[in-house]
Amino acid sequence: MFTLNIFKKFDSSFLIISSKENISEITTLCSLDCLYENGIIFIKNNKYYQKLRGLFKNGVSIKNIGVIFQQSFFKSLNVDDESVLFDQFNFYATVESIDLAISNFSKLFFDKFNKEGNDLIDGRQMGTTDIHPSSSIAQEVFLGQGVKIAADVIIYPGCVILSNSKIGEGTVLYPNVSVYRNVVIGQHCRIHANTVIGSDGFRYNFYQGDHLKVWHFGGVVIEDSVEIGSNTSIDQGTFSPTVIGRGSKIDNQVQIAHNCRLGEGVIVCGQTGLAGSVKLGNYVIVGGAASIAPGVEIGDYAQIGGMSGVTSNVPEKTAYGGHPARPINEWLKSYAILRKISLRNKRKECSH
Image (tube, rainbow, N blue to C red; front, side):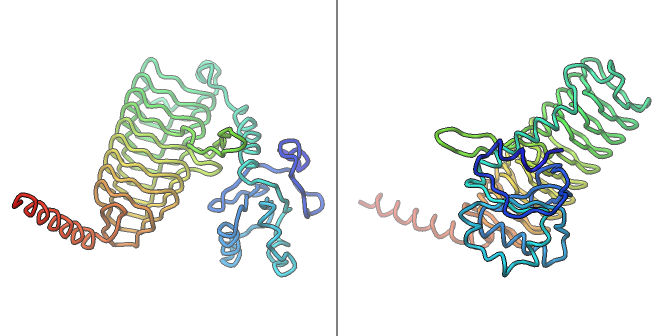
């Protein structure tokens, strides 16, 4: 898709340190959670570098992957000591600012991928849609280029499904659901009114007085038997999909940000907010109006109390609550003590 030379045009600090001969064209950008052949990953600091090393030690193939390092961090590395790792890379290069490079390079790929669809003319007029004859599509529904609708799907008025998205068998979309490009919705799902699936993640890099957008093109994957309430927003992943696991149930007015990954059978109650890259294990339950900070991981079968603020990882099969969230018994005990002190002080004030 793109040769290495083009990146210099978008970031003058881009410097190739080493590359293999006859390197293939670069096809996409990647996250460390989802590697694609002939893709690029970004390493800003030691946190991401150790994660990359961990993937390699665990046998994950990183061949045909290019790596771009933050220049200042790369200077701290001894490449000779890490030669077994570095020999795997398609190429490795440095930039002065990883944040700036991500904003610039993501726009390049976003523009390329978005040329592959047409959402100004209904795909049925262009003859590019694939709709099973048993499905029911109401009036005032728009389908973009290349949309695929499986058997027994029902789509109510006002829905918009943009290019190259797929709707699985038996799924129902209620009025005014908006599905952005490259979204995959599985079988027997129910998506309630005014929900938006696949909108851009909220990520900007501040540089010289401007908030530079990170351009998202990772899409969303919603697995089978998922139900999503009304007025919920599920953002697409940056370079790989946001994933909602099979059998999960999401209430009204929930925000699920870019790169989140929900396991099977997850319950998320109303007005909850998941920040970017949150991971919920299988059968996690999140109470209403909870907030979960970026990158937090919550283990299988864990429970989060309503209105909690989760700022660190939660072990599996535990119950957490409060702000900051902590084990539920500890939180309740501390709350009871604070209330006891407050009432005691109030009685003293009244006695005077």
